[in-house]
Structure formats: C-alpha cells, structure tokens
Image 1 (cartoon, helix red, strand yellow):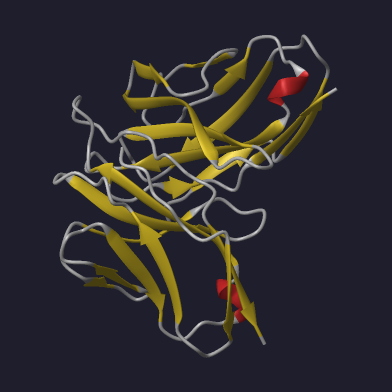
Image 2 (tube, each protein chain N blue to C red):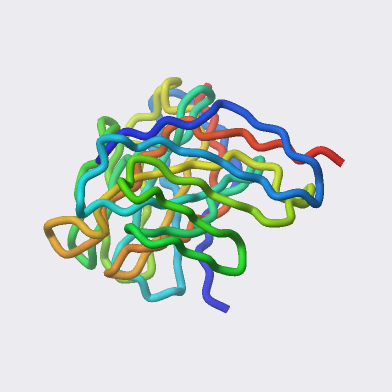
Length: 115
Length: 112
C-alpha cells in the first residue's frame, strides 16, 4: 500500500468547513483513497472513499487531485462531535484471494473543533 | 439493526494465562479482522479471515491465534499473555467487496 502523509493536528472553528489534507504521492493506479476517523475511545468509523473522481456523501466530501498524488477531506459544517483523529489510507480494493485486506493505519490528523 | 460486538470490554489478566477475546457480527460479512492499538501507534493488523475455516496472519500475529468456525464469530486467543500484549483490541468486519470496514467498540486488555 502507498504511504500517506498527514499533518499531526489541526484546529477548526465550529460551523466552519474543516479541510484535512493528505499526501499520497506514490499511489498506484489501482489504489483507492479511504478516510476513517476515530473518536476518543471508540472504534474507527468509515467516512468515504474514492478512486479518481470527487466523492460526496452525507458525512463529507473527498477531493482528489487530477494526478492523484494528494486529496482533501472536507467536513462542510464542523461540529464539536467531529473532534477526532482522521486517518487517510491508500489501498487496493480487495486482496488477491478475493477478500479484502486489512487496513494500514498511520498516526492520522487530530482534528480539534473549537467552540 | 446489524452490529458488531466485542466482549469483554475490559479484562485484566496475569502473565502466562490464556485469554480469549470474543467478536460477533450480525452483518453476515465474509471478512473479519483483529487489530491492536497502542499509544503512539496507529491500529496494527493481527489476524484476518475471508470466511469459514480461513485465517491469515497480519503484521503482528506472534502470540495470537484465531479460528473461524462460523460466519458470525472470530475469537482472538492469546496463548500465553505477556505484558507487551497490554493494548486495546478492535475487531472489524466487511463484505466481500471490502470498501467499508465496520469496527467494534474495542476491548481494553491489561496483562499484569
């Protein structure tokens, strides 16, 4: 799996958009970009994933640059409950055996939403 | 609603004892995973399974074993607990496509 680089921590004001960057300059053509988050003392939670097109769901938007070397997760209207560690993960969709491989978590970005 | 549960949520055991952590999912997912999380590290993969009777080693499998006798359960066994295995353990599952993994609430294990 390609390596990712994220800032250690970020602050954002409540109600504003939170933009979390991720660098994955060695990404391969068949690798997806995934975002998960982990709220304190809970299990990680899936947010969104994408291959090359921008994606949006009820939680967030994912913007992937045209060369796919970086991406940005956008939480459009951050709330205090969005305070968490956010992980950017790059991997192929499924392993060679037909099943899905485990995820490789780095240290992520600690996003703190300020009231 | 479908869910994934872990038990116990907290466990204290002594060095050398065998310990089994339970993971149960009602998503009917083929894939199940065990991770551990330590301070200063992200989650690290211990073992995973693609289906009944299938198990595979992950990044940090030494000292751990799993077995998959049905779709719903993947128990994690520490054969002889060591202090280095004090950690928070997370179980997860996904369907065959594997886009999204659903994580359990975690088990905090302390080995004294």
